[in-house]
Length: 298
Ligand code: GLU
Image (tube, rainbow, N blue to C red):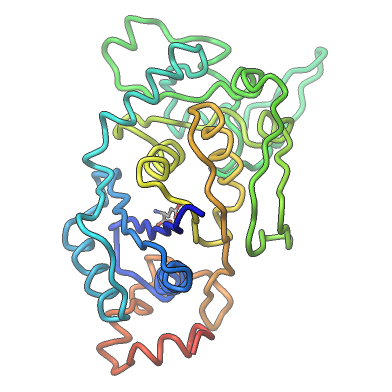
């Protein structure tokens, strides 16, 4: 039996809250229960928001909770070469394409009436893991190479070609807990949903060498991750990760998507809720035991 390797992968873009504590504790305890390893990875690719001070604060919170992890901590900001190699591989196989669209361009294309058989109508783009599916503008109308030489661009996965490259290989992953609709056990991924519902996701951003989807797949493979413990909000993204694993020849971990931790109003905790940060709770006199009790883990 290969030993269990769990990882906690926060983005150091703000203070950790009870949701982070829940993910980290669940992963840590699962690793400990099977004498496995627990790793920490800083998902710090968003240079505009990631800060060393948040990384230090998250580590201090985790240590206060009683967690320990192997060092050195892997930082995604040091992994550009690995992401570049994965992109080069996909590019050689014609599975990605450059995209110049801004968020505004995408929103405008999505809200423009579509013309089908001469009749204009407002089509609602299906919702994928990154929001409404990209309408395919730069796939259908490849940007002028002169513009690409001058302007920053993103790389998008050509989802149709990516699914075709699987040559009929069925994609599934194992869910140890539950997806948002109670999905559990072997989860089959519908290729039609990848193409239509999810669409051409971004793999490298204009301002970052990899998107979350690419970085997480490359790094989970690099770190030998066997078990991924994270919030249920990422359940749909796992289908994209499973596809990328198949395309890049990366192993597929087992997944445990856990319930989301909500505030009294039922809202999912987010970094904007600074007042719910672990640091604030600590300052109010909470103990690590109080955190566990609040999370139903005592
Ligand atoms: N960095 C991601 C987040 O903070 C977690 C990604 C993951 O666990 O795969 O939401």
